[in-house]
Amino acid sequence: MRKLIVLLSLVCTSASADEFQTAVGMGHQYGGLIGAQVSYKSDESKYFASLGLVGAAVGFQHSIEPDSHYSYGMVLGSEALRSEDGFIFVNGNYHFNGFNQPGWVFGFGVGATREDSGGFFSNTQGSTETKTAVSLNIGYEF
Image 1: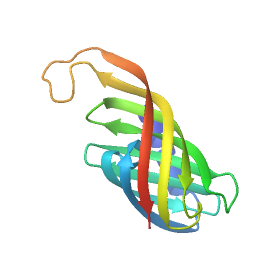
Image 2: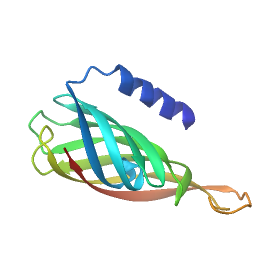
Image 3: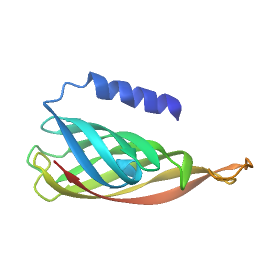
Image 4: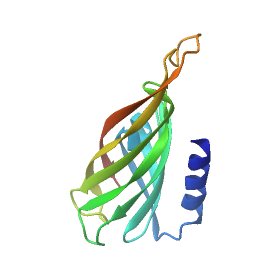
């Protein structure tokens, strides 16, 4: 899991995107509960890193067409409440003003979370459980 995060981070830094973009929101794409996202964005692709109150994530989004309202992608990271040992989601987003315009974004994802049964706030280490999960994301891109 850590190798994937490092690899995706390297892809993000070597991307030749047209501009930086910032966003705030809630959900796994924003690092968990509530967070901020910074991204490199071109006409059809976006590579991002997010930092939230309880976690962090990296990922990418790809638009079906340059002027499309729909995008799909992947996000992976970790957050302290339900997936302290990591998560990975394949997701889809709807951009209300279009992929290349600022505005509201609503998304969903299907993937897996890994959680230690002892919990983040517990002194005991339990076994790690992998569970299938659904993620909902809502945010605003500036």
